[in-house]
Image (cartoon, rainbow, N blue to C red; front, side):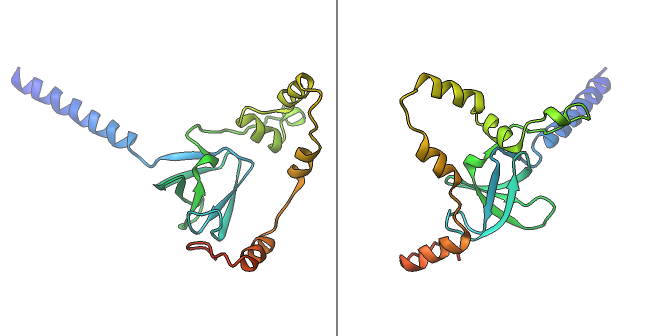
Length: 164
């Protein structure tokens, strides 16, 4: 009887150890914004080394303040991404043959991931008819190139910590 209890205890221990080892594997997260810039340093002024898209899965290597160092998918390199661009949820984008015509655009998916979509915007505008959204619509179209950012930093005598 003692040998059987010892055997069962050993099997149970091995099972728990195996499950625990599996559960402690690499921490994976998903990109929850339309486009995420991965930087060389944990700073918005750090050099951009890669871009990720909504739903991309990344391995978390380290956290520092509001930044997360991640392994770049399909590469041995790593970089820093702002933690607000990541979610623990696994985002799966699929479209079957019948769904292709009605599938959401990447813009709609990114907004839906944040709980904001065209319907929510329309309802908000309907409830607030006197608000002028002209400048918001214009701001959404602004694009600042990396070259313009570098020129701005140079003219302002700014030097991003660890960036280039």
